[in-house]
Length: 393
Image (cartoon, rainbow, N blue to C red; front, side):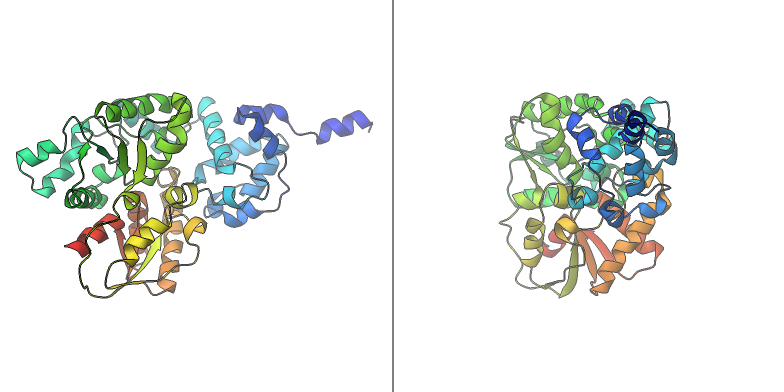
């Protein structure tokens, strides 16, 4: 074999790299993978992958396009970002997983649940395909007068509460917008809801339809918020927070005209009750809020400030938290695998003998609650705003 053929056999296959990633820097980083296995060791979904993350990246490097694409392993990624954090080469692995989904989508592939979700978004601008008016059915449980309800949709306000899709359209977590609305009213916040709120667009991106198709969602939601004259947007959904702060600015070509905060950052001065029955709690960090947005202390500070709370930290906490199994559309693609990941996370809470897991994400609450039911674990799952309003009441 001559020198030329040796070189050609061992060079990275740039065509395949270019197909799955439009960013030259990403292509260069994929080529630096040293097969250390940190990604595979970090992956909560590896048991559902026909190609482990380490094998997947090596196959990408070698240009083994059919093996990579046929493996479908990229659909089992929760996009939790733990592999990104631990990769010694700084390779944006979650981003490349999404790029593989985009290639699958461009090539005419489909995943039934994902395809249906994207169709729902096109039709109704929400993930369930519900009539947009159903986004506010949860308000009926607040027993507001017509006048007070109308105030929640006033046309000008300092603050907008962006609810997101899951908490307003899935009954299991409908208590979250109810609780947060009560907390905001208790705090005397000048806030309003968006009567024409759309999905943040993340399911479009995670579904392989491409980030460029999120632009219409970004422009619409930004326009609705700016139309209120709001200076601050409060979110209860970590993924919405991520989209607003990490994706929207790139799509619109500049910074937002308002500040986006998770409600745990906004609600810091609430009056606390004098006493309460002691409850042992632990806190599960949502991947988007903790690892990707570095908000780990504000929720813990709120919990620890409440009388009667005995706080115990789980293994894998803060920015090193393990995923609940509900991210990256995994619940849609493989509900069994999603449930197994949730059950593993439940065991971490049981290890510290917690009575309750508190989290700050509606999807984490849904997934963890499902996992606890499946394993018949004697532990309660609550979202932070629900726990706060119950303590303050």
